[in-house]
Length: 253
Length: 308
Ligand SMILES: Nc1ncnc2c1ncn2[C@@H]1O[C@H](COP(=O)(O)OP(=O)(O)OP(=O)(O)O)[C@@H](O)[C@H]1O
Ligand SMILES: [Mg+2]
Image 1 (spheres, each protein chain N blue to C red):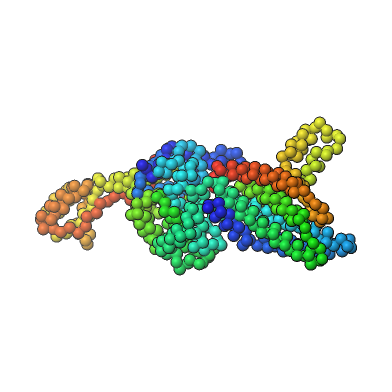
Image 2 (tube, rainbow over the protein chains, first blue to last red):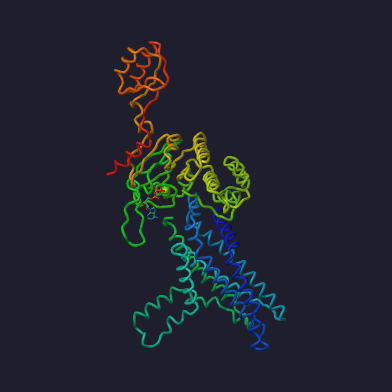
């Protein structure tokens, strides 16, 4: 399978990238250091550890998605390794999707590793992990898949630096979409309101993927909600990947 | 059917600053027959790489059409027929030649056993065995070129498109690439390659095309282009009496005497043959018979001036 060959190679390359290990090191330090923050509220240890650790999984996953993702296609063009690849009897979208899937595999493994570290740490503190904890991780991963598809789109149209800035901004705004429509009175009826409202409807609401406080506090989340959030993310992800494929289709390399 | 055919092919790159760029390729029409070795010549910036990139599907033309065995280069099918060697081939630095060929084999949908067979065949052909487990990062230019050739041959394509396959190689390296090209011709492949090294081109090409600033100014068999048929001939003869020499000299365009003998430059092959017959009949001997053809280099330089 051509797509799988590209995916596997993308994964192999990322695994040999130093950035990955630097980020993983910081993630592990944050998770294991979270207890220090937990002392502030005595008796709340496990909750805080869970909360901070899940946040760390999300943030470091996003950083990896941004750092590695925004250079996925760009680097192949820049280093000209793409010349001998897209001259093969394969469609360009297969290349884009292959790069994306390689990245998705990498993030899956990174997420699983960070989750296992967190779970082991929580257990060693005498706490327990329940279904909601794992559902929270699942939604974090689903959000990473969405972020990565945006990163791949950026990597096929612009440089990694600009791409990273755009993806990071989208991530920040996506987590605070309501500020776009909760405007002060004097904005009502202005063009600014209209433009911001458009942005609101275009940018995915990433807080839909955030059930971390429920997980930390052991509150149950309806499976239907999780499924809905996953479907919501998939729609955006597929749209972004289609856009990335289209953008790459007629590009001169 | 032509292996490669282009009709009025043109490319104008889009500039990033909205400034209009001149066309890099303009109205290129050519046809390369199956099992032909075609040399594509032109100075730096003439548009050779642009043409080759269009044929390999890396760049989209802005005008005209190009076909590989009848399939438009805009379509994926066209790329089933080709093996492409870029100008300076780049590969994943962290892979070994074996892993590299395996990767490309998978892109062609080859199974594990076929990929092993491909490796056995290509590593022998290109002498990759002794560097099989070295990473590409540590490769010299010559090793990269060899690997590039092997990568181009993965999937056994019918047409090879090579962008300056001999550039940067030492004389032995260039010779082995020349031999490879001839070997591929014997295996009934079609070879389209660009080059600056006119000597190499002269030795192995059936036909050439010369590109000047994006336009094709000259195309054809090398001997036709260089007008070999009616070019002058120099003969050197010795052991002749003075009156015979005088008679022969009267028919020559120019004459000269050296240690080797009497040099006579005669108008064409026929006159030269007559002169030789006379010389031999009179007891002389023939030392040398050379057709004074225009070199490809002369023709290449002339072709540059034809440009409008
Ligand atoms: N990506 C690009 N964007 C804009 N202009 C380009 C691009 N690639 C090539 N050109 C221009 O197109 C023209 C032809 O370039 P091309 O690389 O095809 O020449 P070439 O014949 O291969 O030259 P060389 O012998 O130096 O390799 C040049 O003027 C070059 O500047
Ligand atoms: Mg070139």
